[in-house]
Image (cartoon, rainbow, N blue to C red):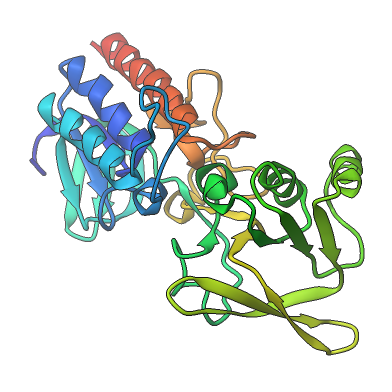
Length: 309
């Protein structure tokens, strides 16, 4: 395969990557999907997804991603896990994709590498992911009905998610390292007016603790140095998002946060290279939206290949 010219190389094995593959392979394009670790992406670690169309009772993230994969393989996508892409080199009418195992040549590349939420890097955070620590309110909020939970952050995402979580939780405590929020004024107004939301100012988390599930979070006041422990059942972290774009940082146009900039048809500034899903510059990040991106990007890639012939 390394000596032949492929039609499409998809980088990333999450919902956007698999959806791209389903469409390109149905277009009879020779498609290779490369994933640097294990396929699935963030949805694979979500216990229950209730907002993906077609599953009124909800579905586990692992099962949903497994279905995506089976469908992509059914149409002929060649999937290779644990093969990370190191660089993309366009030129001479083709694109070379270099991995830790060698080099592939392709006519088009679809980047679907997504991103990862920024972590607070305190004891207990990693241990309790899926057991009280979450980075997605819409995914996990319904599990915290009548519970007391904490939200870490003070920007738009944190305040939007805090407001959303009041649909389920009895009390939401927003923990912010400053004495005022960075969120937009309208969001602040809504949050301050919400009786279920409290604020813990000038504070940073230092430890998340529990037994089988989260039971508390300890915070430190950055001005007084005082430590306080809050009894909570959930900790939702919204301090930013890191797109997986390091391997194209010197090739493609990125926004200030490092997301790939695309046009309406998911084309980047380099011909033949497309970006779909959470890795690209946009406002919302949901599985259904990533799949929509992937559909458009895959069809645009197919059209691009047709124009080459």
